[in-house]
Length: 164
Image (cartoon, rainbow, N blue to C red; front, side, top):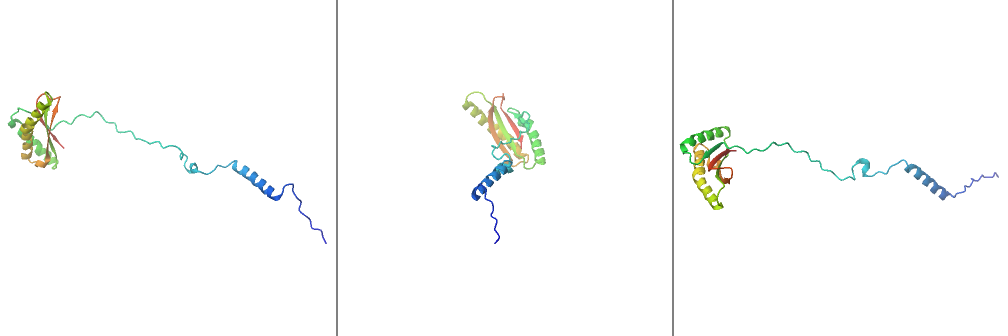
């Protein structure tokens, strides 16, 4: 009977050889590789976001809008009514739903009670007369807005008409 050859035995048992082979392969393969995490697909994944704020537009010095008409108290109504009526008709021809802001302005002098009395008097006489002229020129009463205020830059009461 022929003699069967036996495989040679190594110095390490089989489970130890497999463990050693796995350790060598793991050490060799991980040396050139990088673990996959969220930064693999997005390099800035762990950084805090920095908000981008676009610079605003450059704004020149804001000047107050000049009034369309300015009427000083004491002027006879015949001297300004036709001019205001013409302005109202032109504004309504250009923009039929125009809003007319009638602003009564008095000097800010004296006590608050004296200023309040001057505002009431100026609004009842000058402001109301200008508003009535605007309505009689063709604007509806809903298109007229009246306000009154005191202003340190004014030396005598006046009524200003703005169109929006």
